[in-house]
Structures are given as structure tokens and as C-alpha cells.
Image 1 (cartoon, one colour):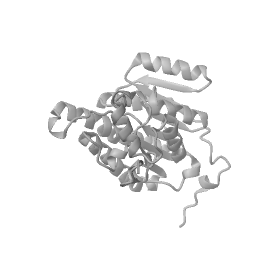
Image 2 (cartoon, rainbow, N blue to C red):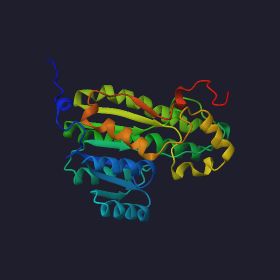
Image 3 (tube, rainbow, N blue to C red):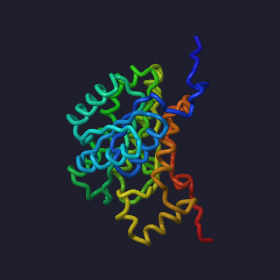
Image 4 (cartoon, one colour):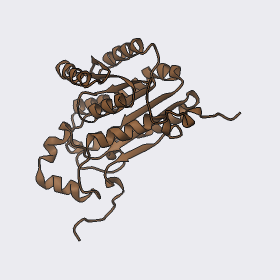
Length: 270
């Protein structure tokens, strides 16, 4: 028996019209760009934030722009709140979910030996445990859609060593391997699982560390394209992995990094 992927030859290969999507942490930065990208391609999107004021403002701005976006207050680092979020999503989309984007993540930069147990637990629960548990909770809805797609936001730190980022790097490496495993485990249910791995992107999360001009020059020096990335340059990669046009792509981690992760020793100043 040979499976036929009719989705690959669909006339709407570059559209998400009629599809449902959940994007965690979609009120700013990469998450906000992903929400706008998916809605622009026709998807109905639900997002979440732990900050109610920020969520309300984001939803007002998006819906005034003509987008159809709903949202709920949720801290995905908390197990009970993850369960409540997915109950909301199930009710909203009638038990079916086409797309889930695991975007929420955080970082603490310090030498490995200086991490407290609380800081370690916070990074693991926010960055990795949330992805693992949300995938568990979303699985019945993704399977019910008969065309499911998961995209997680990883990092180049999951591939290469970055200064003072041992714990964050470990969580991103875990996301990468979970992506590969679920891609194989869930293929029978027509659920694709991929990830994107950004380098430094212009968001509020990195403003402070990049305010150091000397450090910023170091970032430029190891980035072949010689600049920071824009949130929309990540969201377009996420959107592609959600589209029917990418229907034969699963288990992949796509680096969106200006070439940083494959640079090797190639100094910009000869």
C-alpha cells in the first residue's frame, strides 16, 4: 500500500486557509511575528501570554488590523495552566488543531557552576518541559485534524557552544531531539514535527546583552551575513514548515542564523 500525499498537489499549497493554530507567547518578538504570518496566510490563531495587559493590547492591535486572533492568559511553565490552555484551545477549535507553534522560551546567562537549582528548574520547565507537555496535550487534537503540524522555536545554541548558556543550550538540544523522535513516532498519524533554530534576532529579549557594542561586534564577526535577524525572517521559516507546500518535510531543525552555525573559522577582517 502506497500513501498518496494529495496535500502536496493541492491548489492551495501556499495557503493556511481554514486551518487552526496555537502559538504560545505570541504577543511580542518572534511569537508576534509568527501570529501575524499565520493569520496572513489564512489560519485562525489562538495565542497566549502570562501578561494580561500585554495580551489585551496585542489582541486589540491585531484585530484592528483585520486579523482574526483570540488569546488567553497562560504561563506555560506551569503544568496546570498548560492543561487549562489546551482545554480552551480544544473548545475553541472543536477538538481539532492543525498547527502548534511552541515559541515560549527564556534564558539566564551565567557560568554553569553558578546556577542555582531554582534557575535550572525555571529554564528547564519553561523551555523544555512546556514543549514536551504541550505536545502530549495537543496530540489528540493534532491527530483528529488528520493534518497536524508542530513547529518549535529552538536555537543555534542547541548545535554550538555559546558563552554562559549551558543550561539554555541543553534545553534547546533537548527540543531538537524531541523534534526528531516525535517526527518518527507521529508520522503514522500524519503529524509533521519540525523546529527552527534562530541566532540573535532583534527582540526585547536580547536588547540588554546586545547593548554592549563590543559584544555586538563579536556577534557580527561570527555571522557571515554580518547583521542581526528580524522576527519576520524567523516567522516566514515557521510558516513555511506549516504550509502544505512543505508536506514532505519532518524531523528537521532549520537554522535561521545568517550562517553563524556553519561559519567555522572565517574572520570578516582579513
